[in-house]
Length: 151
View 1 (tube, rainbow, N blue to C red):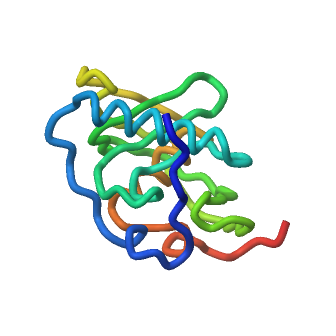
View 2 (tube, rainbow, N blue to C red):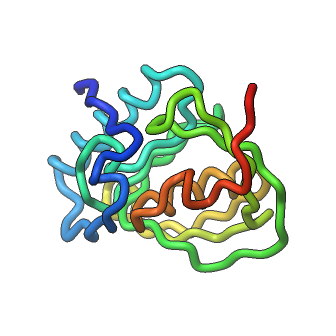
């Protein structure tokens, strides 16, 4: 495992759509481990998309304290409700924004072994899913910010 350098602010990788992963193999699993280590090494990191370390592939790791989720080719397949959120982003350190996200979402993905997953989340997990999946489409926090918040 290795710590990876985070891409910050206007880095081009944060504004480009990520390509699907063709095969879940040892290289993908190693990258997911690096992503998790990088996320855990940061302060308050709850999720990380591959583009945030400069890799334009559809990979996400999330841990809200209930165990690590490693997602390959995740996509949103359902959403309902609405919530006003306070969001930060590892690629925009020290910045916080208010956003509106669905209250509940359903996400389809593969796990680190290529097994199909159908995950549901509400509240904080729904927000995190949406935030990380936005990254995979080249959408970052400033694109969703209703207003910037001083903390």
